[in-house]
Image 1 (cartoon, rainbow, N blue to C red):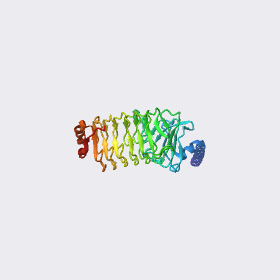
Image 2: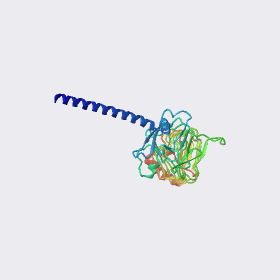
Image 3: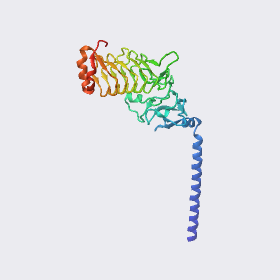
Image 4: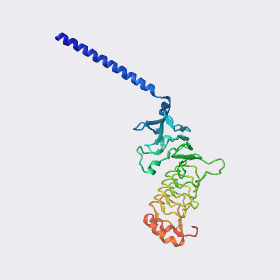
Length: 332
């Protein structure tokens, strides 16, 4: 009986060993098979992007551009799909899409519906539009969008929402055309909103003229446009200018604010060291904090003669030290 038990034990051990070997073989073969399943299309996408399937395995999200693809002057194409699965989102957790900072041209595929910093998208419509549209892609000269894309569009290398009522991103390194003596841009009449950081960090833009339907200028919309000299609001019905919208626009010397402006956000002209004079209409209701901090050349703040006292009251709330600069003028 003892010998029989020992024999049966040996048999059992051999069976376990065989099963283990077979399992290992199957795992190895499975791994090889899985590797063989990876398509050339996916390999190419993976070499360029940090690309991942969503939790349902129904969509691909691109999280950043890999360093090897972020090369000087490169053109990057966001694919419509990979292996038949649509590529729908560009997500930059590092903010500002800094991983695209060396490329010159970006081509966006037809299925991209979100560009921004959030991995989980709110049902709120403005959140779905996204944020930080390549604001730190500082070498970007042009953005093109597939005509079949239902969320975004482009014209002359500028990124808009689909119906071009929102100007999302004017590339930081976009320069003047051959027909221009200076780098100037006229905002199309379709545009209602200049989005946050839309023109930020463009170092060649000198003149901007607003279309006749712009109502709102978003936060930091023109921040860091150091060569911007002339801003023509052109009677656009602008009622709000966002925080830091013209911060560090060092070349501005005169500003005539929109005639329907009601709210000037905080720090709008912070650091505009060459700003000498500014004109307010009598529609202004609110001026945020630190609007003129660092405006070391500011001499005069003009408004209608019969609005001087009211403007002084508004300035007293957040910008008291500039009250003595306010005077009446017929220019507005």
